[in-house]
Image (cartoon, rainbow, N blue to C red; front, side):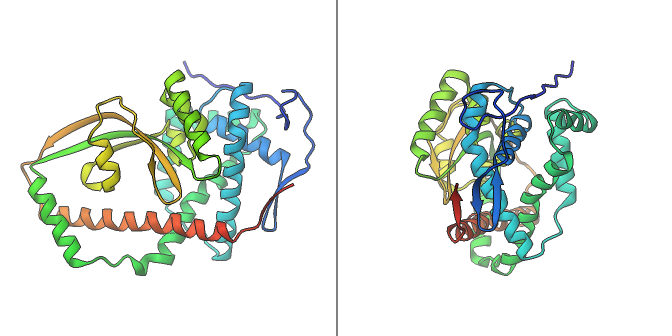
Length: 308
């Protein structure tokens, strides 16, 4: 039976009363953009729905800081997209993303629309917000595509190493909790580890992860060991199924991984051309991820963010 939860509440800004009335006063200014209490309220509702969380006082409180970060990130990225007049994005990937979103909640598109409408959220607004990330990926590619040139020696060396090891390939099925870097990072990490210990990994994902994978319960699926960054592989390779990793720092965030499963695949038919194609794709994606994070950090550092 399909379960649809409805959030019928007015968010209380100081958490004095769940039914407290909301005025639409400005609480945040990002460059020339204003964010109001109603914006924050709607963002919290959207987070709860997209992450399949029930409405409780605790969840509302826990998601307030995440909603702040999310709104700031969206505004900064949207300004940059407008600056470059970005309209195009990978529509096929976006449709696939939406279908996975509906399926993971056991809902049809119409039922998802109905759920949003009952909670005074616009389906079109939610879609526009989700498209920001896909348009951002297009922007980063267009800005940095000329810097994706790879060293031929590096490629051939990686291909040779992979062929040597491709008789047996280890794959890891992973889930993640990604926490943004801030003055409160240590406190958030301690809270996240405490939450996953007390209530499980999924609960910690819903409350603390800023990654887009949070709407998929933190799952990032199967990852070939050859695709993984060295510092991540070093940690994951020591783990058993069900283990939780130590926090792994990246340029702008810290990630906690859970090893959901692993398998060793024997590969008797090695296609050098396909391996090379995959190596090139993986190396370029790593670079694009680096460019994406560094570009965002750069424009965020020059953005005027004021709490009012």
